[in-house]
Image (tube, rainbow, N blue to C red; front, top):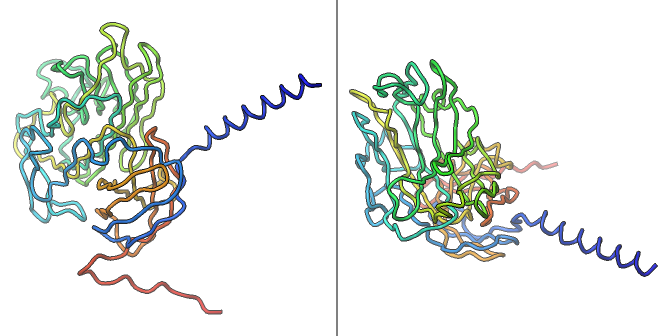
Length: 371
């Protein structure tokens, strides 16, 4: 009888700890402060985990041009303040005419920061009709810019400190096979030569001449050939790629500590002639997955609009202070606040209403039904 009681007690304890592990997602219990563009709010709750650094590795909204304290290179990108070429809520971006060029991106300035974890978010726009998958998929016969001009576009690239390009990992959009081939989104490692990709119609999406948000995350495997690394990719808030069995390195040469190489447009097969414009806006790179997001749906995966909140001034397991960056989100409408913890676990959405900022017309009063 005593033995049975001990076994039952052990099972109960095991269930208790398992349940706590399963239900450890961030929980938002309240939001205080003036929820308006540029104003600070406090998010209260539990299981927010930690954020090692409140300041991201690099972030720039380009409203004042390129902040060269953030980046050590902007390649061929130039500052652009043409009003008609801005995304909603922005007054400045970077642009490039992709004419015989394979680079249109930014590189982080601090090469001494190496980490097992990376998260990035970028807003991009291609000139309508620019993307042409050519007559073949990637890899293709020379000359690549004729046979497959837009078949291998890398948006995010990381590699070990001290190495120029190998072994590196990259998040890219690729066309495989024949004419025009199958378009896919992929996370790839050139060592151990493994990757993860899924079919995705990116040429049609990015050919529309509109702004799109691309997000990526990377977390090293726990050991060589461990097959438990995590890679993810989102387009406009929809998760288009997810693998938690990513083999990120081999026993030899061993585990590389990754630093960010480039974020933006990089494509050796994308050389174009004449007018071929690419635009880049709010670009955020961090060594932590912990972040705050605002979206237009209570289920984050169903959001059609969302904005990363990059200005965090305090973060603890129970409280976060963040400055609202409204971006493309319209004021006076219902939105939802989300917290993502250091492991990439997402909270349920907390309903909020972003009010107008100083100088803007106030939100209309909420209708009240009198019975």
